[in-house]
Image (cartoon, rainbow, N blue to C red):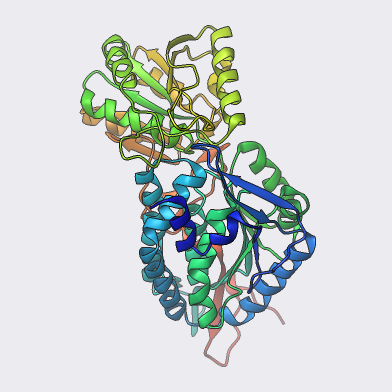
Length: 513
């Protein structure tokens, strides 16, 4: 499927001839006032299209649309809300190939990963449909005779979704589909780096929601931080802001939203580590490191940044890893032979090169990579050689997440030191250990082990199933999305006590009057 076919299939065929509207407020706003952004493919630098962004007026239109829809949507029975999400999932199935290809074209991840991201949307739609019949509350026994006490969950309201470029469609669905079955409406501010992906998603779900009279459930406002981003996080009409991005961005969101006593659901930096013990299955560990460090060109929040090697196998594993790195196919992400595509832009290359130089200055040793990669036919693309550096735990650069295919190797003496090194950073998203020893695995998973929100044994740090709650601790923000009971973030809890007697006893045995 070529670029023209992809764009046409997703209703984006006019993107190359004139600006598409990046604002949907229950309907498309023809001429948004927030300036224009050009979408480029990081694979070859080609222009994919131009998008007109929203300004202050368009943001207000989105809020009005979401508020009006919420008044009606919250009264729709949750299973009926789930039925519309089921239809959205089916629509994504029909457009999986085209949307997956667009993710690859606009973001740069290889095509299997682009398709996998859309499959994740489909999976979360299925999860949400089942969830629509399981928004459970608890019943409690009252201490007062003739009283019934229970809790129930109600929709929270209009929520804001701020997503990042690296997962331009899936992260929206994690929030939007679950929030929708909970009865919420929402405004999506996508990354201006990947605006066409956001418009394509709206084009897929809009016909379903509009036909049911609920076009205002999913609203889109492609925009810059100012004025829309800052306005959104300060807006008391939005009780919840779910934000995915850097730690710096998350701290700003948390500060502003907390200042108005709103809720924030934050998915921020990773800086993830993978421990390899002497008894590990080395082939398994090697595969886990390769995908974790090189998948999506190191631009996942769960990408492996640090590999912590037991000294007994450090030399052997390093040799095998470097041999494998030299064989990784780097190239056009649309080609089936490619395993590592481009990083998102020139700034990402500059950041990676600066990190390499800083690591050298702090005593790190460059083992392989460290340079731009040349890809025939893609001279305008942004390609870097996957890079491995030898490091020591005291290097300050290890505290900082570099969003690129840059991996540090650290040698330790035992499991206790390995866990201490892993936990010795400010982030706490994903972690992994490779071991066949039950006691070591359990130690890693214990309260004295990994301090991350995700802890894996004999699988890598990258790639999470939607059934489990996704998120991390410390500077990662503490948020949880997707599976388990993460739906509670999108609802408000209400404790109810019902007296079915003619008496009015007080709790704690208090008498009054």
